[in-house]
Length: 151
Length: 168
Image (cartoon, rainbow over all chains, first blue to last red; front, side, top):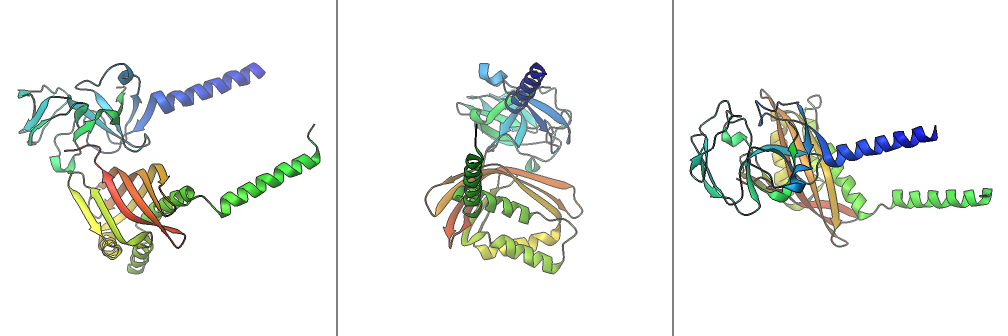
């Protein structure tokens, strides 16, 4: 009986630890990541990958605000030191077009060239059908990126 | 073996400690409660939307702020919306409410730091979800910094500023 209680306690504590600090469950609100992540959907944010290496282009990442109760879910398209611009909806990295297989339709967004500082990433949503005015995207500091979406 | 007398002493100390905490909460606790009350009072549903309810609501919200207040919030498109003075805030609230079907404001990850006996600063994630009549519901979430001052033993908000976590 005693062993069973200890085992059960360890399982509960371990589970709480994992889902609080390593694999954070996130419910998605909003349409900015459509069609790949739907409003009302659910995803886990894995905090382990960025302990070992820096975020990569194409990663869908969670960006923390004052804590991790509420986070932005965005895709990285620009890396530190790169010059990024968007011309008629096409993302250009150092003047070369970026292949984005995850985009189905795109509106003709226009963003002037911008150079990313060290430790700065450019994040954006997958839903480019919506007008750019209704979409939150841009530069974010590395320290704000807390993990990668598990799927 | 703990005697009955020792139990009574422990119980008395606990009751006194809880009473002290409850009846004279620390500044940090007062500020947390005040800000959470503000978000709860800001929220409303479609049910209570008459003119009197709107006026009472605007008054109640304005009471959380000092007479001179600076509010700067970032909109989705990266532009900022600013407002100063409590009276202007009240007028904005009065104008906004009839257009909204409902509003739900919540505050998460609230961290309060008391800078002096009369000034403090709090950082939180503020989320607002509203339904504009005839439109889909909208969601706004930002990291927000609040600055408060103490006046007549009550904390008033003097500054509200959103942090641009993602910058255009």
